[in-house]
Picture 1 (tube, helix red, strand yellow):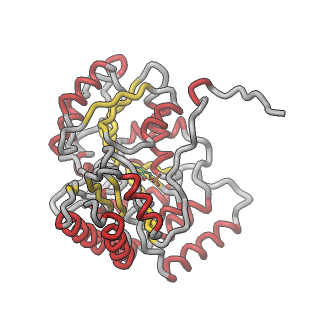
Picture 2 (tube, protein in one colour; picture 1 turned 180 degrees about the vertical axis):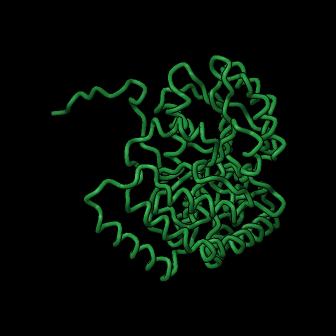
Picture 3 (tube, protein in one colour; picture 1 turned 120 degrees about the vertical axis):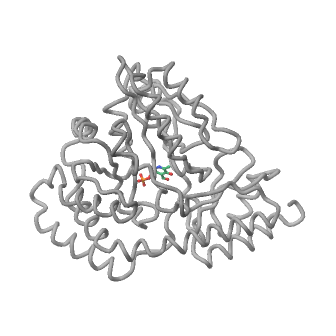
Length: 371
Ligand SMILES: Cc1ncc(COP(=O)(O)O)c(C=O)c1O
């Protein structure tokens, strides 16, 4: 007997979000760091979790001050911007941090504006918080069309303009000039004349090329700016689920209203703190991953592909006359990449040296005679 569920009408027919989770030789589809933590890091995390488990009869610290201080220290080292721990907020992945932003500032009869193509979870945060999702197109080179973003934000009195930088799936970083223009242009343009917020999603921030600055450098002078980060990508801790953001104290106070009590478990807090104490070792791989990215971009260009300039740990390349056939052919050889973005393009994450070699030889085999 089938039950008739009182599912929300707007969720009817929706599928759960997620890329395929397949056992393959080279998993190059969700932009993870390919290097597992060292024994030393694993050992520290295990010890910290053991200590946290011994006190697990108590709820965890609701405001996680030690973790916020460690994240502020990390950002100071990574981007040169010194923030107070009270300017940091964290949750289970930057997905949840983003949801907190939408819960606090979005909602019915409110709008968030984004620039397509971009991260495919954004419409879901909007749907789940009943926030109108308004999109504009990026310029042909995938940079931001600031005028289009500002007019869409103004017309919809948007609470939030959400920009991924580097963008997923294109790898394009937004210039500080563009972020400044958005912050200035949204003043007084939000609901009831409030200041619209600019959210810069820097999930891939650490992979940016030399000379590309983080939006964190604008926080001191722009109080309607929010910068989100994650430990899932460059930091190599996707399994931990720890995302965070930096913003003014007033913005953080608003997020504290909507978070579930004790949303960050004592286990997560302990594991994240232990991982952050090894930041030098974990960050050491970033330079090599950047090199592999740039080498692969050169190689793909030599093969005749158009490769979008990337400040992230992935490359978008094409055009492919039949991208699904290429994707499937690679999968048949144990290489899983992603069918995402413009219709005739594919996205490949940067893996280890061996994975990159396998990707290259497989791509040549799959496209022989067609490319
Ligand atoms: C642009 C962007 N933002 C956020 C995320 C989510 O990261 P997290 O693992 O911190 O939830 C991703 C993951 O792929 C992403 O591509």
